[in-house]
Length: 222
Image (cartoon, rainbow, N blue to C red):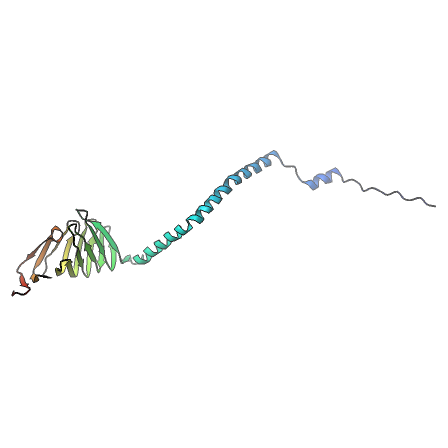
């Protein structure tokens, strides 16, 4: 009768194998780095969340401002290749702080101050009431001096129904003076007059005409 073979216990792992399986023990320097990174993350994450919330809150306003900029750019119609601005608008004040507005079909910047205009139109609002409207086929605007030289069919219209037509004219928008040295025709409630030149001062209140002149009154004879 043979005896039973005693069971064997599995051998314990060797200490060197246990050390190899667990990896390296973290050093004090690596622990310090991790602490710094964790601290930075704790500070950076709230700031990033606040920035994101601010962006979400301000996003409609940002989109609106971008749309406004696109609209202004589209209406202005600036063409960098040719240096031409379409539908420009200039605003200024005269010596008495009365406002005037100057628009045009197109404008081209010539030098630092001169602007050549196509189809300029000016509106002047005197402080005493009323308004003056001027238009022509072409013009040159000296922006710093507030001087407007008009050519082509120049038409100056006052709100009382008086209209002045000439081939050229010069306006000092700041001083409120207009003048021309070529034949001019004036039409109004009084009748018509043909003269060889004109000078308008005091912002349209006083007008002088150079002779010889021909005046035809309504209901009368020349």
